[in-house]
Amino acid sequence: MNSFRIICLAILLTFTTFSPTSQAQLIKISEYHNSPPFINSEGGGLGYDIVALLNKYSPDTISFELESIKRSVLNEQLRNNQPKAILLTNPLWFRKIRPDLINSVSLVWDADVFFTTNPLVATKLTQADDFKGLTMVGQNGYFYNGLNTLIHNKQLKRIDVNTFDEMLSLIKNNKADFGIINRSTVNYYNASHGDNNKLHMATKANDAYLFSIVLTPEFNTLLPTINESINAMQRSDDWKALGKKYNIDKLVDLIEFDLVELLDLPL
Image 1: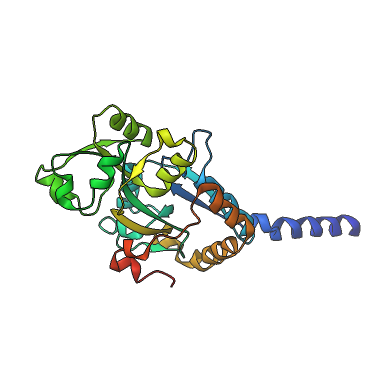
Image 2 (image 1 turned 90 degrees about the vertical axis):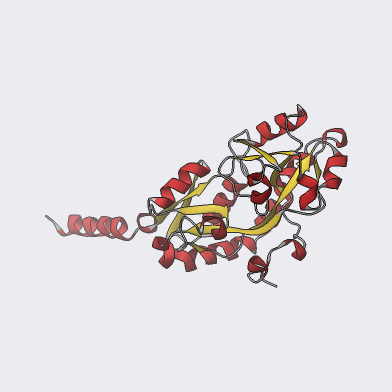
């Protein structure tokens, strides 16, 4: 082998061994939300846009890929100790399944709100007694803070469905009095519908919380890099535009948070 061929081979091996793309670790992020703005009928949504921005503002050592998954399937995977990264969620909701979960810095806030097509019903949902004798529609696999006692005592009837559209159908057809969903979903819906078709929210949220990326302990060594990527993303004009696009740029009232989450707020 002549010297020229040896030099060419050495150069080829150098690029093959030290190419940045060959070192990038792919992080598959699961998202279980199935309603707008998190996911829409076109196969896009807030979750996909956040992952795209994370890839834009992350170093070459990591990359992200979003997968849509049912909450029940995700719960089972966590019970089976599978490594998971979960987008736009809160570790408090999984503490009974996996108390060892870690989380990134905060992404956005949100809240569970009661909504209905009838403004009179919405204004009356302020305290526990107001729910007695009513029918609520929620999502399969979801826990709703403060309502279990009423449901267990059969003072409040709960119907479970899989999608936001199914919720709306039951309420519009008078098969349920109200539903419970993310405030961001109601805001997103109202922004694209006229005043005559808007949804009405109760004045007080049922529960408010911070969304982050929640991870199993296997990702602990990558957490600092993930946090740096989120911080870089949130300093960008792209992030500001995303907030306006999905109506998530307004802060929640601090009084809506419970004490555990209030202590975690970056005041």
